[in-house]
Amino acid sequence: MNMLVPPSTKVTPPPPPSSIEDMRLPLPMMRDILLKTMFRKNVTMVSEVSEAICLPRQVTQELIDMAREQRLLEATGTLNANNGNEMGYQLTDAGKARALDALSQSEYFGAMPVPMEVYAEQVKRQSIRNIQITREQLTQAMGHLVLPSDLLSNLGPAVSSGRSILMYGPPGNGKSSISNGIRDAMGDKIYIPRAVEYSGQVITVYDPIVHSKAEVEIDDPNSLRRRRTFDTRYVRCDRPTVITGGELSLDMLDLVYNPTARTYQAPLQFKSAGGIFIVDDLGRQAEPPQKLVNRWIVPLEEGKDILALQSGEKFEVPFDTLVIFSTNFHPNEIFDQAALRRIFFKIKIDGPNQENFLKIFALVARKKGMPLDEPSLVHLLQEKYPTIDNIYANYQPVFLIDQMIAICEFEGQPYHMTPALIDRAWANMFVKDEKIVK
Image (cartoon, rainbow, N blue to C red; front, side):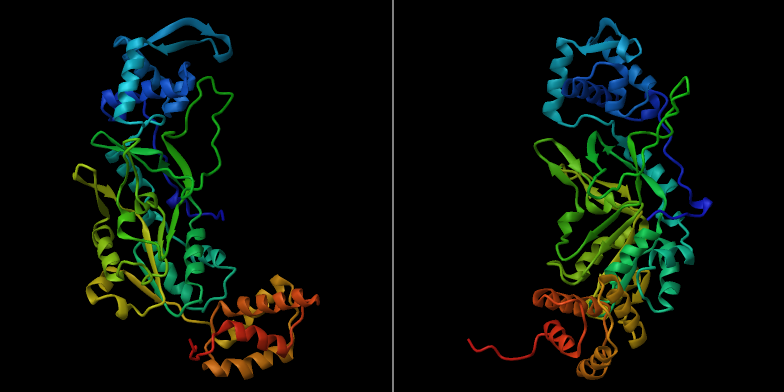
């Protein structure tokens, strides 16, 4: 969902480097990535190499000139008319040997990585805490949900603060949907690095599964000198959302090392930088909730995370993520008070009252083409709900209507609603307490 954001929150794009010195990367590393990329992708023209390693042409040319001085590259001696009369370049025998040796040390090639300290500067420019969500934006993003009137008043400040949120309450009342609505309210774009570098190691970050690439910005074709509007080592994306549930374990928050490629992959919370990390169904993981939250204490309080390389060396990375914990348990059952203090906002998500339940029921029925029937609704409210102490939940209208639709389709009848169908649907929503004789 694309929504307008206040001009003050417009993200400043990462500026493209103008020289080798601007790169702030070790020269041997840049040279080797250049050689590996030309070797693996079989690119020869400066424009092709520039696109492959995601650098401006003038910086690419500097790297090529450096490799030529070391006799690792040579000009092909011919101009290619199909490529604007560009000079072609190829690896020398020494260059091929160097590329193979570099590949044996690390299979990484392609986009030049961004130094960690340079990436940290971009994180500040696009911080989740720079966003100011308005009531109108949040209302629009939650427009498909029927919510208590005071819920948005509680959610708004929590989201705008960029601090951690704990949503708790009975199951089936839309905590996951609300989390997704918060994500949709953030309509701006940020810049995700394809890879970052720390201590000579490459950590890949951009992940098409996590990151939704925004529209491509095209250079001005009428310009004599094509100018890149931002550093293309980054990908312009919607603010990311990572959703985990019962499968979350502590090792998923560590760097993932690929022993074959000898590169690292960023953990989930790193990929969610500038966006949202949702821990759904907290309390259903193999790890105790207290242990999971303890892992987040330093990041939540200090805005930085600690990761470790295979060598055991630990280092800091920026942590700029809105963390949303969602649980069906009461917080006092799964956390001690010290942990609760570190979660900035606690918001209870209750089930709907009868009025909102009926609104949800009517909305779902209209969407699914199920005609409403007043005697059936009276039967549901007066005969069925008193048996569960009139406790309503947001998931129940969808469940009941889907059950009735399934029965109608099986019986070859048009969609309709009767007290008898209500009874059959209700019987599938709850399991009767009884002893099973084995």
